Amino acid sequence: MIAVDTNILVYSHREDSAFHKPALATIIALAESDALWAVPWPAIHEFLAIVTHPRIYTPPTPMEDALLQVESWIASPSLSLIGGTIDDAAGEV
Image (cartoon, rainbow, N blue to C red):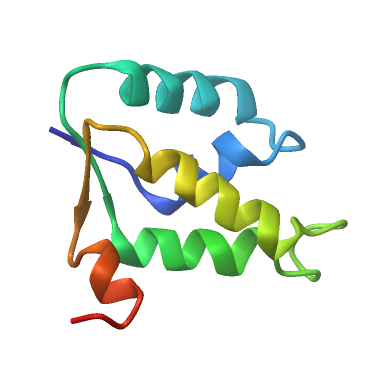
């Protein structure tokens, strides 16, 4: 199993990143593969904090767009979220 860190998530999302193309290709390959891959919940939190922060990116990603990005990753049937479940994130423990 391959675990993806915050940097790869950010680079794959932000087209203004110098690493956008290879990071996006990696995420697409993982998401479309039958092989298991993982994202730790802290990486999702960090992704949201980084891409929506106006002092880090100008313009920042709108939170709605960032959340849609996370939802698209979670939709991958081969993705395993490490450190919790979607119900934990929604407060439905």
